[in-house]
Amino acid sequence: MQQARQWHHRGVIAMVFAVFVFFGFSIGANGVFWKDIMPATGMGEALFGELSLIAPLTAVFILLFGGPVIERMGKRIALTIGLIIITAATMTLSAAASPLHFALVNLLYGLGYGTIEITINSVTLDWERERGRSVMNYVHAVFCAGAVISSLLAGQLLQVGVSYAQILWGIAGIGGILALVNLFLRFPMSVVQEGTSDAGAAFRLLRTNNIVLTLSMISFFAAFAEGIAITWSVLHLSNLGASAVIGGFGFALFNTVMFVGRMTNASIVNRFGVVRSIMVSAVAITVSGVLLFATDSLWFAIAAFAILGFGAAGPIPTALTAGAKLVPGQNSAFSGALMSITYMSFIVCAPLIGNIAELTSLHIALITTIVVGVCLFGFAQRLHVVTKNAV
Image (cartoon, rainbow, N blue to C red; front, side, top):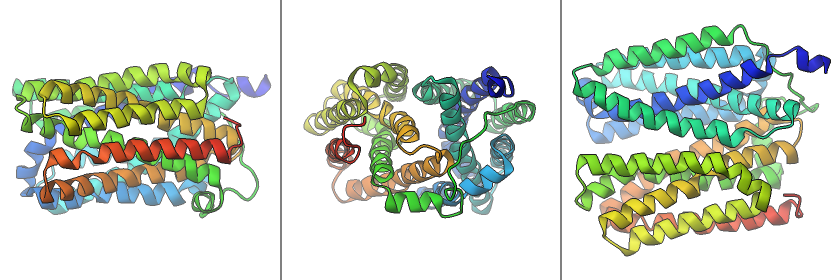
């Protein structure tokens, strides 16, 4: 009870939710701005795609090796630094006028994303341990809400004449306020097992712990499914004859269903268990892939992306919470290990499907959704084996 009075449990969880909303808000708005930023920086599609890889690659490095640094400096300071870096990246993007500027923006985003991902997920797991409640699904759900709101709002603001630079400065202001408020919060203490906080702890978990590797691969395929919708849904719907409004509606529906899926996933896990909940997600992703591949109907495709949103919603937060229980005392190392593999999926997804689409067609390339669902189902079964029915 004494320890519970020493940290701000309500303030901390409020900050966790606020940071996830800000995360989604930033990413959702940026997705709207790329069509204007590319000509402003003199980039074509190929160079834009190549430079965009800097952010996830940098984040993977931070996630794999940044855990011990974050533990030493403290998660409050680490989260503040991460928010400051994202704020700096956003301000830099508002003034980017060349590919070199855009490369710098992506480097800053990678540093910020990696620092915030490993810190905020670890803090949430610390909070769950201290309070005895599971909230991981809910905090990941508000990311989707932030992305939906910001993409719609950014589009409306651009339409009435507000420049993307002005909107980016507004987003940066929100990040700065969160960083300032965060300095005054007291976070729950981490419980770290001896010998698990060195620079190679996250990588070692992936190499030696079958549970961590299996949970990480579950997150990899869930994120791959999410990346399919984020990168290719609007283009595929457009190819099927959708107007800009209908294409935007399809993407918003995906994010809305994903939000609802994460809000309800905790009850599914509580009722059926971790393994069965992931199997349900795998079946949903597979069904969406069958619909996308087997028909060229616009409305069936929209329904397929909605089903894909439900399938991609649950596995990542479920894997994070399950891992904290199955690998106790290693929250930072575990979060870094799992999220590094998760970020790798975003590195692989877009170029893989893009190359398949270039050789065949995007319609055929989306058969990868079926493969992702089948692989996710297989790793759910593997989790059942490696945990010996513990989840």
